[in-house]
Every structure is written in structure tokens, then in C-alpha cells.
Length: 84
Image 1 (cartoon, helix red, strand yellow):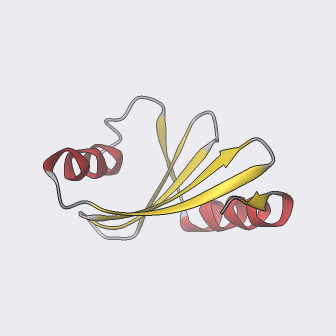
Image 2 (tube, one colour):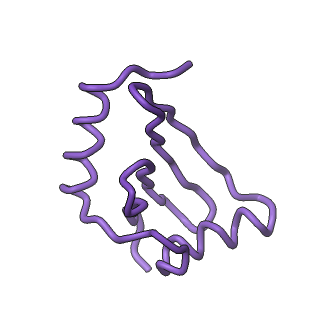
């Protein structure tokens, strides 16, 4: 698998950039706000979650191209407020 890999939930509330089998970045929408997370998957459940996202084994996950991901993330950052 070539990284990075881009995914989102079909409800379009979370967007993922997966940089490696153990590093994931998530942008999560919460109303008018958004949060950004980095997950360093050191424990088995986290590594399994990253792997499942990569292989689209998570219910409601779908693949995105990098241009699609960039377009959506840029729009989120323009139209929502970062929740600290």
C-alpha cells in the first residue's frame, strides 16, 4: 500500500489522512466547529482501526483521492471554527 491514503465517513463528518500503518490524521466536524487529531497507533486496537480504514473495513468509510480530500479540508477550514 502506498501512503498517504485518504478516507472519510459517508456522513462527511470525519476526514482521514493516513500517512503510514501507524499514523492517522483526522478532521472531525462538530456543528460549526472542527477538531484536528493525530493518532499515533501504538496499541493494537488503534493499529487495527488504522488498518481497517485503509482496507475500507470500517462501516461507513469510503475512499477519497488527494485532490478531493484537499478540497473538502480547505472548505472545512474556511467555513468552520477550530475547536481548541
